[in-house]
Length: 357
Image 1 (cartoon, rainbow, N blue to C red):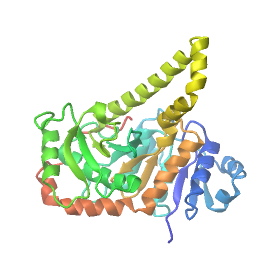
Image 2 (tube, rainbow, N blue to C red):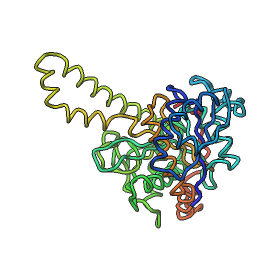
Image 3 (spheres, rainbow, N blue to C red):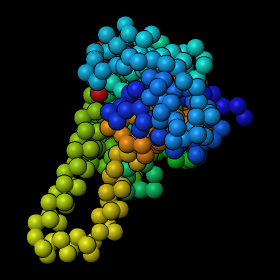
């Protein structure tokens, strides 16, 4: 099977070209049928490829020495789309030269440029940023939206649920992922009108490849009781950062406790296997790769601070989405839901700001 190439914004990310190339090369070991377009400074990319001859043989370089800055406004980044590594990687998807692009750069700029260049799929009003988070269960949980749309109506939430379920089926291999809407309570009377409307529409829907049973509260997101959590980008971004902050708090608290006395240090040595397991489970590099779902092409956002292992995970996610044809899955599920059912939930024109995640 001939698979589309993956474009790598080699200039994106805090760690630079070497880490982006190293991560892509590591991911290619599990996806050796893929070829890559590496966008960025040619001399630096060639230097990084010297350590990975297999990756070099499978890659083409598109030279570019301009980069989207981390604090650059999306509106300015759009104007520089034809001269920056991020913009050229996205354009490669738009022109059909690649099936997907991966970048560790500015999230808001990546979303704005991707949406303008690729447009949304038929039946999708807005793309959503979806990510994977660790749980106590066997699988990670898919959560969306994580910051692309600050204000969403019921129609948006239903579309997010359909897209999130399609993504979850790829990463969990579950035929009917468990989908819930994030709310301040699980009772059917709780939440906004849009939440209650979306919940009722998903309950009434037939033929969708998902299991929907209402609402979930934020303290249950990581319990392993659900496969997809759906919310607006404002609430989703706050929940994500609260979860990440809590994870850092726990690990820092343990580090302080284990170094507070000689007895604590001895206790650390005894419990080290358990603490190492905890550290591995909470390491964001093991769950790296946010996906902009709903576009005419696959765009994956890597954490800017990701190391080579984190970049490899982002590229692995990208490869899986291309191998399983995520856009076709979403289109089929939207058709199953039916435009008439979606139209009854709202017009999809609620306001939204520039992405700031």
